[in-house]
Structure formats: C-alpha cells, structure tokens
Image 1 (cartoon, rainbow, N blue to C red):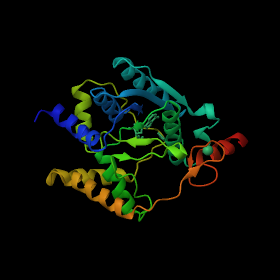
Image 2 (image 1 turned 30 degrees about the vertical axis):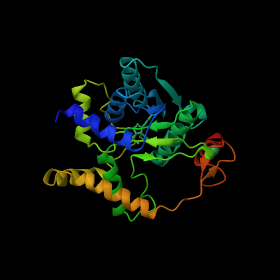
Image 3 (image 1 turned 135 degrees about the vertical axis):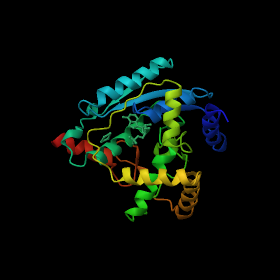
Amino acid sequence: MDFEKYFMGRIRSVIDRYKIKGCIAMALSGGKDSMAAFHALTNFKFKLIPFYIDLGIEGYSEKCEKYAKEIATMLGYELHVVRLKDYGIDLSKEKKKCSVCGTAKRYLMNKFAFENGCNYIATGHNLSDAITFAFNNLASVNILNFRGMKPVLEGNENVRMVARFKPLFYLKDDECMKYVEMNKLPYCNEKCPYQKEAPTVELKKWIHELEEKRNGIMLNFAKSFEKIEERMEKKQEIRQCSICGYPSYGKICKFCRLREKHAKI
Ligand code: AMP
Ligand code: FES
Ligand code: ZN
C-alpha cells in the first residue's frame, strides 16, 4: 500500500473509532512528531488552532518556536504562543526540571484549549513513545502511572478538562520520520538540554529490535496495555483547583502551587 495512504489510514481509524470532530488545539513542540500530526490533520475537516508553549529554556525554546512558527505559516495558520514566564515560573530555578516542565506543559495545554473553546488537544505522542513509557513503568514497578494507554482520553467539562487526542498513537517513530521527510516538513532535531540520557533510550531500542524480528508486536503491546488499563481503571476523584478552577487531585493544583513557590523565590 502507498505509505501516505497507510499513514492517514492509521490516523483515520482513531478519528472514526472515537468520532472525533470539532475544534482541535494542536500542540506543537517543534519536534518531528507534532509537525507530522499537524500536517496530517489538515487533511480532515477540523478547525485547527496550533499553539506552542515557550518554557523559557535558554538556547532551545527559541529554536523550537521558530520551527513551530515555520510550519504554521507554511500551512496557512497563525501560531499562538503561551509563555511560562508570564506565569512567574522560571524553570532554570527548579531542581527537577523535567517533572516541573511536564506539569507546566499539561496545565498550559489544557488551559489554552479550554479558553479557545476546543473539543480536543492533539499531541504528537506516537506508538514508540507509548510502548516505551509503559515498559519503563513496568520496569520501575510504577503501576499507578500506567495511564494514558489510549489514543483518546476523555475530558470532563465540570472540571474544565479538555479531551486529549493522539493522532499518531498507532504509528511508530520511523514511520513519523518518513512522513516528515516525504512531505519536507521543517522540524527541530535538537534535544532539550535538560533531558539527560534517559533510561528509556535503551528500552526504546530494544522494543524496536523486537519489532524488526516480529512485525506488529508493538501494536499488539499497545492493544494489550489498553485492555489492562481499562480493567484497572478506578476513577481517581478529580475536582477543581480552588485558585484557578482547572482540574486538580488536591485542593490546589500543582501548577498553582508552583506559581506560589516561584513568587517567593
Ligand atoms: P514530549 O512531552 O516532549 O515528549 O512531547 C509530547 C507532545 O507534547 C509533543 O508531540 C507535542 O504535541 C506536545 N508538546 C511538547 N512540548 C510542547 C511545547 N513546548 N509546546 C506545545 N506542545 C508541546
Ligand atoms: Fe521539558 Fe526539557 S522540554 S525539561
Ligand atoms: Zn490551580
């Protein structure tokens, strides 16, 4: 089968299965996957709003923003930019930068999508990332983190939580790369300077080697993990943060606690 047709077919299967429609906030990191997702989604009848979160990482964030801007312009969209520093948070002052960055990204993505009346947030997460993440959790006996093994995660209007959509959930790393190259899409090839040699690199390599020997094994892993998650799913009570009104597991959300901390630094 023609590669483009195969690629779009994988995305279409998620869209049809979950009946995705309406307005989508497209989260662009500047990396290859979100570029591919954005380009591919322009083939469907969605209202797309591309946005980029500037995390203020010196020498890195500016470059990523440039690429995100470039693809938006190329596809005829205006890029929206959200800046972490406007919330008084300075990542460079944090010890656990990646974890704080993750909290900030999740929060700001959701806030952006909610404020713009979007039905979904689309991200560039692909099959390779999902399987590696799951195996990494198994390897560190972190079963509670065994979440998000689905291409679409429901939202909850009561707590201002927008649904998440991973169009590339059934596509591997090399397939996303091939799509980007075939369509000559710009992307940032640099890694975040805070990202140390992650333990997941080895795992990812191993999973791909396995896939080469047993074609389709990754997809089967994904399907099994999805079923496991369905069975273990117990609804954790989620409520609104008493400060900002966005989703939180405690009285005050992680992001507001971060803001409070940085106001004192
Ligand atoms: P990561 O968490 O870096 O693996 O990125 C996963 C996905 O999150 C990307 O494919 C993007 O869709 C989104 N994302 C990551 N960083 C940003 C950012 N700075 N701004 C907007 N979206 C982002
Ligand atoms: Fe978040 Fe590097 S992109 S710490
Ligand atoms: Zn809050």
